[in-house]
Image 1 (spheres, one colour):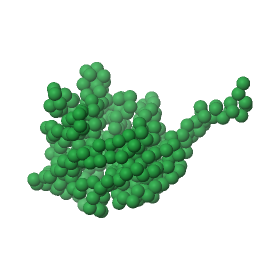
Image 2 (cartoon, rainbow, N blue to C red):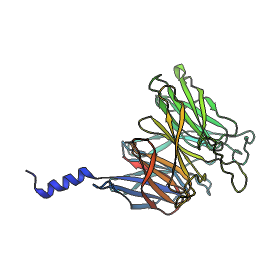
Image 3 (cartoon, helix red, strand yellow):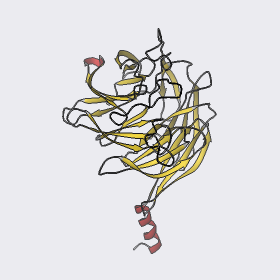
Image 4 (tube, rainbow, N blue to C red):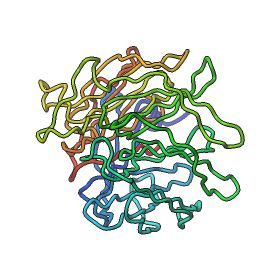
Length: 373
């Protein structure tokens, strides 16, 4: 029989859990956070460490959980060149730098060969130029590749380019990991594609690609067809939807420029719901503090069409990025202008993230938050 004190300890472990998160900010640091849930279903979010990255604009984090390596992209807002840095993570949240390399100046895609230890070396570089400014010159005077997306088959990489109104497509050579350019997806002129995500239509067996457009503040659904012999991807439009409540106008800026509001986009792990964050829309200006929004859309299992369901408070200003945990029960929202990380819990009945359970204020504008799980 177990001692009574040990039995109580094991019971407490079963009734509570803790998980770490990593957060980047324009303040120059990566902050490690711990989210603790106790036996009373209460959450506590606390800082456990902070590492100065010695970069100017830490903007994106990617965690390889297989080897516990964290990748940091520094976009160098006020510097000539960006930087790629790798860190070894730990269960304590402490980070140890492994390697850093300077990235190419300008608009480009760079690929790297990586090792299991987190070391990496440059493989290829693809540079982009525009012959003339786009439909919205204030935002589209040059290419602006915004994200890299690995497709579900792991045979293609997609790059939404806000400046060029394209989603650039490359096939991956499985022998040496080199890329071959394929025909791009042409987004609506002046829409400014930003982020995207794939999901599988469970009835038709087809893949659906969802693309949010920052300037137009829309989400477009595409049915994806894979061409033979890595010949490329064909995208057929299913529908285009506002990232706000249907009929709600995109708020103007003080300068009158068309900058839009749509930012992050993600599909819930169960594939039932698509979420989009909206910046500077202040749909909840009667809350304290006033809050921008997270839009929820149900995904049709028949054809991938979207139906607007709900607009929920993001917890503050400028939800630039958010991440959903593996269980699909919690969302970590990076609120850039509020310098906050907010944790929202999902209502399993409605499937919305509409209940704030924890928040923490950090130094600098928040750019990215990822779960260590």
